[in-house]
Image (cartoon, rainbow, N blue to C red):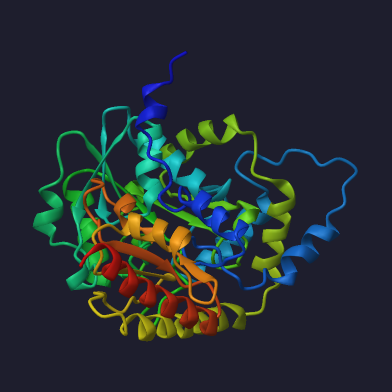
Length: 399
């Protein structure tokens, strides 16, 4: 029996593929600090559960394929607070932000076409493209520049006759970079000049630090070419709800996306009602308190990481990730070793190798991504263990 080329060429998740090593460590009694995945530990707001409990129909029926109108209206009002003017009729509720990305890619590109992104990028962008037989290409941002947007010339040098769209996240997963208004405008200008779609992943727009504000791609008026991807997973600590959004003012893009939305009938209905609850009933202070908490966590992680001799990084300005170059020969090998052979007082750490966040697995060979999704004291302990692991790994394998 054969497997499809699509299946064989698709990479395993760099975020999840080392889980067996974590499971084995736990089976031996080790405590593992999970900094490998963006799963917040903050409580999901009670308003989400209250709204679900209030919804007790005799039959749990399908919703509209674009989502409950009440939910789409709630999202419309929410986006207006962020200078994003979408009507309910311009919003599709999806099964998480992942499905929104797949829909967008499926609408704008055929097999063999190319999608341009900025690397390192959210690892699943590559997986989604491989699933659709689309080639992902990238302009490379650099750690020493704080992963700022590459120059316009560098980005344009990656555009070919097969390029159909620019896909990017702002704030960035995995680097924590927050693009300035000028940087977002550069991407909009490139898309306009080369007649490309712009797929803007704005899942982390509430997570900006040090007084920085998020700038949406919607603020520049290129409505026909702009597609916004969003999710409640991070901002409401509701990853398991699987509620995302594809929003566009381009009526044809919306109509073509609806063809794919109908293929899975609808997003989960109970979770749609829960989302209405948090959007309509959650107090205005929630998001600011959450932002402040993640800034505290960012500060705790960065302070501790600076103590690791040879580690290279810049202070992240948003999301809840930091990318770090470690003084090791192979970050994936190092992470496996940390889980299988190293501990401090029977505790160890799991992070994500950054090589899977590039177009080429040879890039990012010494880099890791840390998700600072634990409370500050746990983060400090985890980073201390990481630093001790680096010391021992270098003594064992590099001297």
